[in-house]
Amino acid sequence: MRRIAGFFLTWVAGGALAVESVIPLDDVDIDVFDKQSLRRGAETYANYCQGCHSLKHLRYSRMAHDLKVDEATLEREFLKGQAKPQDSMLSAMHAADGEAWFGVAPPDLSLIARSRPPDWLYSYLRGFYLDASRPTGVDNAFYRQVAMPNVLAGLQGTQRPVVKKGGGVEAIVDLKQMTPGSLSPEEFDAVVADLVNFLVYASEPAQLDRLRIGKYVIVLLIALAVALYRLKKEYWKDIA
Ligand code: HEC
Image (cartoon, rainbow, N blue to C red; front, side):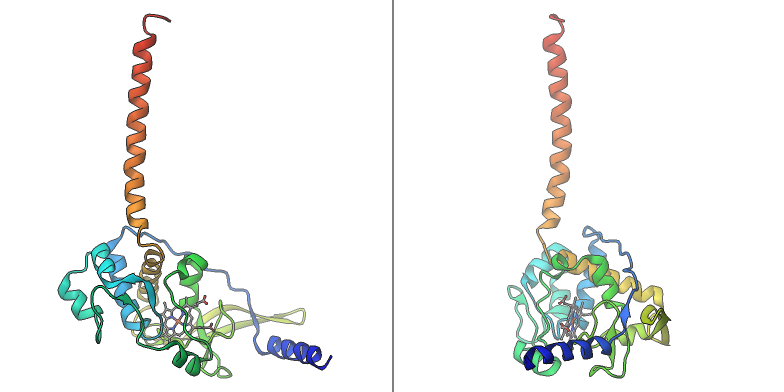
């Protein structure tokens, strides 16, 4: 009984901590054939995300081949420490350390774009706002009480929530810029869009081949349909 009461108490207390957010997701355009966008996204990933998150299903060599990253760039921008081209894009951080530091181990992001839609990822990465009650100093409008710090704050600047009260409930309805980052809001949005594009690619590198082959298959099927139609006309010419 006490355990049940305890559960409800923490539940109520937990609920009271964070105001709900009703901000809708922002749309992002994904184009996995835009190699430049994917390369920019991969560099942002290597510089800002790989310190904590791994991409265990993606090898450097595969990424370099798919995104047309030359050897010198791969060496300079991506292969840090002991990493070799045939290695998976792992993080240098151990899961146990991550758990000790953040309370939750930063998850592997190989398949994140399958469990989270691109619009969510785009909104989430732009959705951090200042909250002094959190250990990291920030919370996220799309992932309440998140354990991840706002690693892109230097580029984005800081945001504060716009809270509306009505009918006894409070909700976050918008985020407003507090201090500027090194990028303008438009530039920052473009950086995040490229990053999400890269995560969508990383969640299924074979989709590049699949989509490209798919186009050929459709062209081939149309050509075949035309040929068959002509053949049919030829056969029936004398009968009908
Ligand atoms: C300092 C370590 C750290 C860095 C750097 C970092 N993250 Fe995280 N990230 C975390 C932690 C910890 C979590 C788990 C949050 C939770 O579950 O509360 C997380 C969670 C996430 C999630 C949500 C996963 C889910 O469960 O749905 C996404 C997406 C994500 N990170 C993307 C990124 C991207 C993209 C970058 C680079 C811009 C990045 N992270 C950089 C620590 C980090």
